[in-house]
Amino acid sequence: MLIVASACKKEAKLTALPGVNDPFIRTDNPNSIVDHTIYQIYENTQVPILYTDTVQKKPLTIIDINYHLTGTNTLMAVRYLKNQADLLTGINFVKNNIIPALGGPLKPYSVLIVDSLIQDTAGFTAATGYNYTTLNAYQDLNTLIIANITKIKSMDTAAFTAYKTDIYTTILSVSLNNNPNTLASFYAVSTAYYNNFINTQGGYSTPLPPPEQFGIVSVGGEDLYGGYYIQGEDYDLSTFLNKYLTLSQQDFAQQYAAYPLMLEKYQILQQILTTLGFKKI
Image (tube, rainbow, N blue to C red):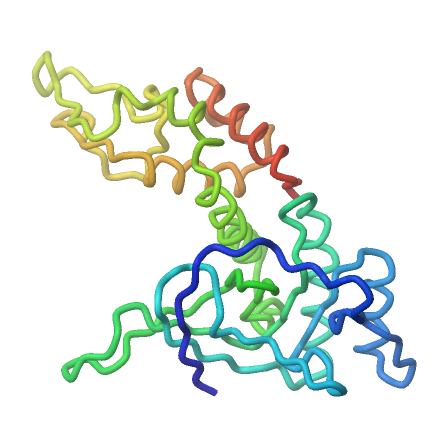
């Protein structure tokens, strides 16, 4: 199914009107283990888990994935889950890894689990056709879409951690981008080094300090004897957030024990994300 997306301005989080039944309310269906499990989770968390775009049949209520918050026209394609075992895998993943991590304004209005989700990122050209990116997650106006559920069963620990990290990054990036001032203290630690080329002063026999000395995550490949370039805020947040989400606090502290600015920025980011309502699982 192909869905043509349209742009919109930033909207407030949806809330049900007084006296109007919220179609996202889940009701029990004891004859379906999938619907019954969803109902139990909803009763405990008030987060509805969906597996189709049909929220309610009477009256018909459908999630419009076209209507989103990015402000960019996109072409989305979604494939829904069909297998009961895969549905239960997705439901339990949301129950154990998504809902507990998201509180306050991060708590999703609903979560839609799907088999696959792709997004047109470059538009159509005669030479290349449509250029798609496969997504693990997407934050829509009234639902958090989580894809690639069928792949979970074959993930090892590293792949599962990377999968969760990508989903968390998607969620947190929306909130952080909507509140850029919250990151001022984080950026302030390394701002003097942004967009600078670090080069050697004592010849090639004298190694340069690694990026971590400036509070910047090294991604490998920096020439510590010739010089390297430090990018700006977006790069800093992206790489640091990935490390924050991938490593436990203890492992982060051990890996970067020799770099005080890295430890300082960890504490700042931790406070920012805690204030937003994020709890690392």
